[in-house]
Image (tube, rainbow, N blue to C red; front, side, top):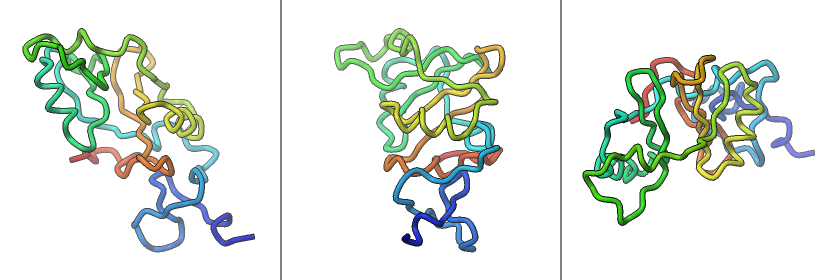
Length: 162
């Protein structure tokens, strides 16, 4: 048995007990604490755009290397998620018209293991986290591009992605 199979990782995919905060790269998905919930592994303050954003604004947002999904909000209310906009869309058109009609979402209280599996299997590796009311944006579950860990600021309140 190799040492890789005996290693455990925290919610950010860092190796436990290593004394380092550099991301470890497990051979498969990280071992996640059985009691961990979505609230332990999600991004608490994902970047958002106003629901009134134009196609041009969303295109600019999505042009950033780390921005895979534009979350449109009206205050705390979730209005839509956009991952792509047709090239033929007018720059000044309302971007909300191109929102995914059924974006992947998960409840705050679901298990972190379920969240990882669902996000890693989804096309964009993202799950929107909504409050119990189903309309208030609480956060975002994000799995790294290599599909081996949650995104780097996951689980820490007040940690913003840049």
